[in-house]
Amino acid sequence: MSTLSPTAPSESAPAVERRDSVSPLELFFDLVFVFAITQVTAFMADDPTWGGLLRGLLVLAVVWWAWAAYAWLTNQVDVDDGVVRLAMFAAMGAMLVTALAVPGAFGDNAMLFALAYLLVRVLHILLFAQRSEELAVRDAARALAPTAILAPALLIGAAFFDGPAQGAIWAVALQLDYGSAGLRGIAGWHLSPGHFAERHGLVMIIALGESIVAIGVGAAGLELGPGEILAAALGVAIAAALWWAYFDVVAIVAERKLREAARGRAQNTMARDSYSYLHLPMIAGIVLLALGAKKTLGDVEEPLKVVPAVALCGGVALYLLAHVAFRLRNVRTFNRHRLVAAIVCLAFIPLATQVPALAALATIAVVCAALIAYELIRFGEARARVRVGG
Image (cartoon, rainbow, N blue to C red; front, side):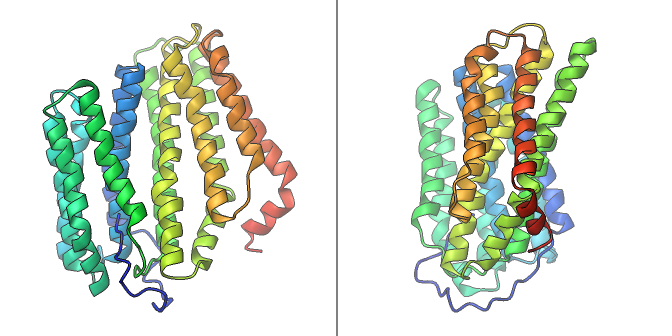
């Protein structure tokens, strides 16, 4: 992600967007991110412990920050430029190696993961510094370079450790990356709001699609009886409800608010907070849901163990809580009904370890469906106005 110097010119920037639509190359690049998310889910599924859950979320946060960095990059540079294309392909290759190393990111492939990730970040900085048409952005990219290199360098150092020390170094690296984006001024960036919002909307579809893939992977090799088929259908129903919760109204309103924000610091800060920051817990919630659904398919008649139960119920709750924060940041209003639904999901965790896994999955599906139905009935007129542009 790009963060710009406080001294860069900002509020006087011309209010002309470069482009709105996401390019085929960006979609092609995102395919590697699909694989990385799949790898993170598999990583946690292979080690369904508290430690495995934490390590998986650390890896997801690292992968997300790399993707977010390129989302800001492609919002600024011309991706159809020949040099940019080649650099993007190189970044895809490096990101693929990073994703391949995810299962051993805290083990045998820790060094490979860190080196490949460093290459992804270095290519991002070089593209920003060399291909941006604006001097302020190039200068900011150069100012960002120390942080963008130091954080991956810490992961290289972490490869020489294991256990809590290794996890602590990862946490410091993430704090450096995410914290520097919050502390450094970001005025001067000429954002294309439509393109930026669409890019993040597409990555939400990717994550939701991955949750469905996880259901399919979880069902592979199983004898498909009525319970397994119902579990798969319930998993798709939950994913559909989460899609509806984001795309039916929220994504539309968020994009409009981003377009309406004063260009420069206000708009860029909103983009950073709403998309680069708050979309991470949404993605994490979907990944956790995928983990819980995958474990449910493993044995629909037995209760879930504690960590898969937390993943299933807590994943949906985390997703909804991120929506509450998203609305609060953009619209300055509080979404009580989604907060209530999140609390219900969290409160169900103890019961999810006592009842059959299929019943737990069905309960979460009912909560999600009830939330969507309530919003459709309660806010039907307002929803219609939003969707027609009123």
